[in-house]
Image (cartoon, rainbow, N blue to C red):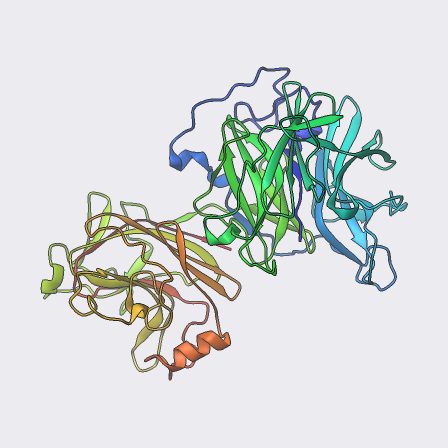
Length: 528
């Protein structure tokens, strides 16, 4: 599977000479500026929330294949492209019949709001050759479409009215020494233009992202003969990567790319990386930003904010999704005791903007305990981040999908938090299902990433549909599917075997009081 090649919607909406987003104002073109790149900001500023955190539109999908047998666009695939000009959204997409050896043709649709689309009466608007994975940019009244053709070879088409296109031929890509690149695929073209130079990002079998540049659109020369963005080392993009879009935002470049964590490419995700020179890229530590096999994504500015569209296997839209602080350092208003409607008066406290439980108790166990605390609200699909620090020997946990049962028990899936090496109950235990970041009693973490006791660690739980993932310090260590055969077997072998709806959404988030000292900070959640 491939994914989209995209450009800043603002950039394509204006004449090529502009460098949009130079100062973070997405609506105002900046004129013919020289390239100004500032020093990379701090980690917390490198990936602003408004361009990495998105929530699915309730009425998705907003555009899809007809589903009618025999129609030329019975199905759509790969990366389409959306360009907003004035008050109209323009969509180019690839349609095909559900049949063997189907040919990919180019379709066109428009929308006043990016949500309700009307197909053009002349569709398909181009059927002389294979067109998919397109990226469109406008310069001096001409629309340039860089697309993937037969055999995954990138080619160029041009138009003056968005509807009638002329073929200009395959892109001529050269090695750094001027010789042609080796035979084979070079597809999913993603284009950026700045200061008289065109930048072409392309993939070869989705096994890496290369960069070539051109001054005349005729000869493209690699900036290096190795990928500028490689697969891995994290699992989410270890088997495939391809660039969809480059945007410039607040002085930095952001590359949105699709990736697969699976050797057979059965599932794809959307991810992002940042650069200050278009060559050296740093991946977002919280990738993927959209999963659940939604891919070929691009950002489009709607006049007020960016929204994201994923284009495969249908068009879905996502709007900015701000984080909700569950603990911001000053208030516990999001929490109550698991056994009452009030926050505990003892055991829990805020100390220097940190939420602490059983402070100073360690393995001595607190005599006066506040008990577990839970969120007032319940959550189903979400991305949850938190930082924690354990005292020597401590044992505690964070639970989700927490429910109160008639017998008085309060149970949920537990992201285990424990001193793996120092807790006397598990120090020499071979049952890794009780290690930090594991799903307690069900699934062990695939690797141990716990920092030394006394240091802060970062945990993350993400729930997409029935897929649940645990991260520890930026590394995914657990992944499972709710109610899958593997989950049901693990549950049947655990102490939760008789709990009928254990591990199902929705439920509360819970912080455990296990009698030991632990500290928490920067707890935040966003619903998906």
